[in-house]
Image 1 (cartoon, rainbow, N blue to C red):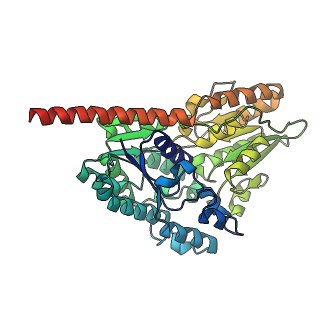
Image 2: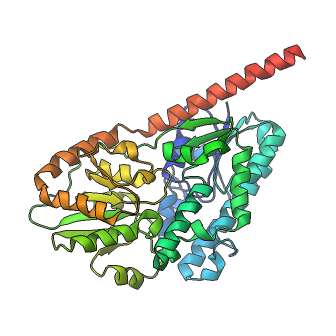
Image 3: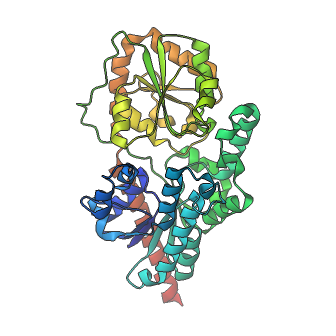
Amino acid sequence: MKVLVSHPTGNANVRAIAKGFAEAGNLHRFYTTIASFPDSAMDKLARLPGLAELKRRNFDTALQGHTRTYPWFELGRMISNKMGIKSLTAHESGVFCIDKVYHRLDKYVASQLPGLQKHGLTVVYAYEDGALETFRQAKKLGITCVYELPIAFWETSRKLLLEEAARLPEWSGTLAGGITDSQRKLQRKSMELELADIIVTPGSFVADSLGSLAGDKKMIVSPFGSPENNFSTKKTARNNRPLRVLFAGSMGQRKGLADLFEAIKILDSKEIELVVLGSLLRELPFYRQQLPDFTYEPTRPHADVLSLMRSCDVFCLPSIVEGRALVIQEAMSQGLPVIITSNTGGKDLVIEGETGFEVPIRSPNAIAEKLRWFLENPGELDQMSINAQRHAASYSWAGYTNKIILEIEKYQNKNCVAHDSNHYLG
């Protein structure tokens, strides 16, 4: 089995599966937009002032010999963002918008498939919004199409987010593409799903969102892994300071930020400090109007995110719709018990009262109740911190990748047997 993996930016789950295929001897090519490896030209460039963002494109050396890049549109997007030229990155229409980045890489990968098939390529592994042309070409060549869907399918997401826009209209501007995606973009997602032979999801919330749309396609449900932790990592002791409650993610109502703000207002306590780490979807004054007193922390490299997590006490993510929010496991790995909704995709991460609490979506009162519990039971925090770390550690990236690879191999072997039988009968 020889596999091609394609993704424009290389999220943690993408890096894990690409590395897993490489270590198993299955990775034929890894296509992305920008890739940096230790001591490469891109790595040295990232050390220059103003180019630190390139450090986020560092990949494991196991991928170096397999990696091919198509950087032009992603570089254009990064430069446009740096210069503040919003028209160039406007949703779906800007020449360097994220949609164009995905589509251009998709077309480029599709163009490479005939040549790669001659050298043994048998499987393509791609992601939502960046798989259509690759899958179309793969189908012509008889190559298996694997589609990883990291978030609930668009029909479920759109329904939930349109309800949010009606419930909290002042926050509708933070829902972005969730409610403004064009019919063309939504149709593209549906066509990608239709072409897939195998669908990979990180949890039951995403799998269930497909319903009958999955048809008779092979489904693989494999939870993401957690950051490695040797348990020597220690959180900052609380002592007599306020309870530091962390929210991390894009600062919009898809992730339930408005509900968390409302919960903090309900408590109205000087004993709580809300720390919000993430990318702004509106200007900062908008958020200050909703809740004046919170600590804003801008995005930063992953190691610094983990460090910030260790300075906090509780992690709260009351999302309306996700796939499986990896940040939950990251927070738990740093010793933070959690308050989350089942729609985060992390229902299995909550052992009620031991690693944290599950709350309903759209329920500031329930969030406030659980935060109050932490205030009233400070003696429970240390043990819950240990429990959270241990439970997060039970989810490994090796487990995530091994299950996916094994299930794809089973599918390939079954199809080979069926093909050989048909050939013999014919």
